[in-house]
Length: 186
Ligand code: FNR
Image 1 (cartoon, protein in one colour):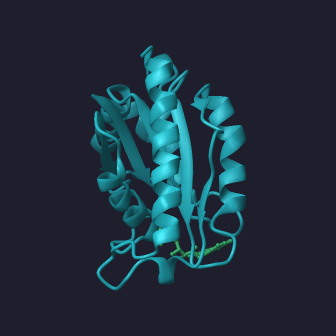
Image 2 (cartoon, helix red, strand yellow):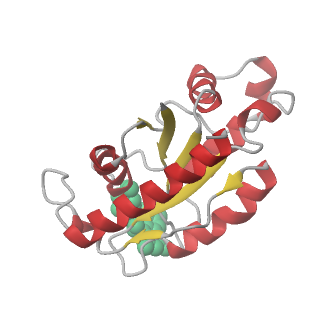
């Protein structure tokens, strides 16, 4: 089984980015599973807090990353960049540096995102690139998914109702899953 961990960068209960990850689950190929993680409970990074012990929410998320085969980041876009909540979590997860080698380096990562606006998080996704590089991840660039007009793509029950986006999401997932499996060596 190929295990992908999807992290939503929004804390909102009705987050379009969380909904996008939920919509991905039934579209996965056989042999691939997607778990969804959110960033609830992760405090603002503070070196003094780190010095006295890591927050449990950070430790728990780190454990989930370490055992996954691939990471799927669903990023909102705030002011044309990465939301602070999401970057803050990644900063926590990159600490302590002694743990770093087992968390991010060479881990397959892909980015998707949804926004009610017209550009579907294109700028936030671009802003992730230097971060993924700094972490030493193995980003997948074989596909792109930028969901614009997200309020029209999901219905009031949070279901993905746009067939074009559903196909784009399925194609993206299949491409990324194959990349993850290749990195797994099979
Ligand atoms: C936004 N939003 C937004 N959207 C966008 O496409 N480009 C942008 O630069 C911004 N900037 C921005 C700043 C701030 C502070 C907020 C709160 C919002 C709108 C954003 O895409 C929208 O709130 C989404 O619904 C956020 O994602 P979730 O929470 O639905 O996953």
